[in-house]
Image 1: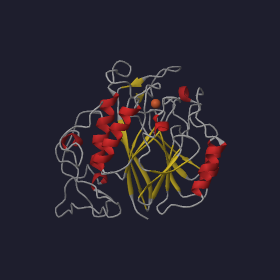
Image 2: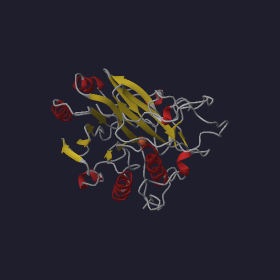
Image 3: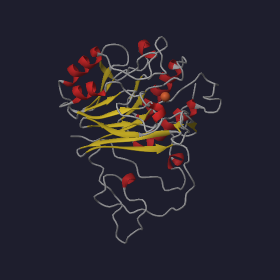
Image 4: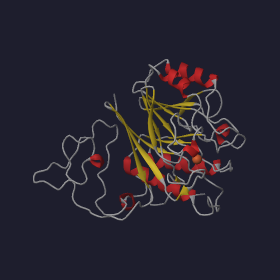
Length: 332
Ligand SMILES: [Fe+2]
């Protein structure tokens, strides 16, 4: 079974150009920054799990242009599905804007099948308009069941906006996917290797039956997990997640795109031969004489780059994207 690296973005909350989210956050710049940072990991695909727009703003033509350009420069598909902020009527999925790599469609926009090599990615629209919780209809579940009846060569990743696991915050109770057991029943015995979600604006991992679930932290802003009771507060933070699938299973690493603090030490790393890839090697180990710096990346379809050696946020020292002419991925 081949290995894959996915970049998982979620909750970009794009507003019309010139409008800042909460009067403070340039979510176009954050989304472009996340796409630039994705280049560091040489992904096999980028998956964006909903709330592309903020409050249904009609930004989809611009978003489709940005994602299409990023896909060209990254050399991989950018797979996009809707969230609860992508209200019906302005969803660009009906305008075929985000459908570049799909091979099949289900009942309604946002329910799609994509293939990346032998890995199948299935997207679902989990929004239940006007309701706090997400839902999957019987029609969607039947379609998913039919799709999964035939296994993909390297398995399947399922992506939807509403997590089938609870938030840490009591304030967000009842806002995940309703009736997760129904989805668990469809996934039981299938080749689904992971479920990717967003929506909570904080990271949470869990399990649906035996399938790992990752709800990624948001590109736009973070949820304050110390918010007073009966209050929800947004924090100025921006994240992507690096998802790895290999023979041994699944991992998800949340990566902050805003500096989370100052550098308190920096020294040479030792890469052990058995390390899966350089970035995951032990960063705090002291250098040893005769250490072997190269790591085995053969399990992944695309080798990972060496980490940047300059201090600070490493991706800032990288070319914007591998085939970029030096021109930034710009907001419209
Ligand atoms: Fe959101």
